Image 1 (cartoon, helix red, strand yellow):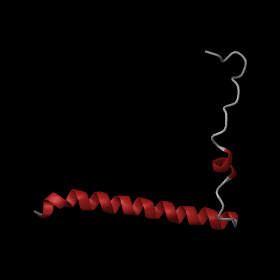
Image 2 (spheres, one colour; image 1 turned 45 degrees about the vertical axis):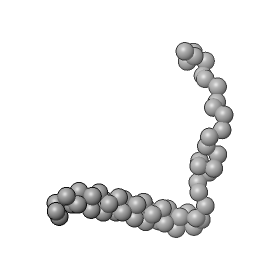
Image 3 (cartoon, rainbow, N blue to C red; image 1 turned 30 degrees about the vertical axis):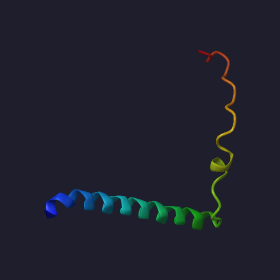
Image 4 (cartoon, rainbow, N blue to C red; image 1 turned 90 degrees about the vertical axis):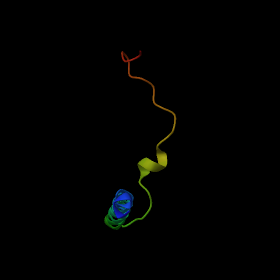
Length: 58
């Protein structure tokens, strides 16, 4: 019975550790920037794509 739940417990523990690590690193980046705001890349990303360079059209 215990072995049936082992994989689920391990998966949830791994997921929790990954999320915890990501939050910890996010905090370190915010502290290093002295600004918790998101980066300019994430704020400006998603606009219209720039035109292709000459000779790269497909």
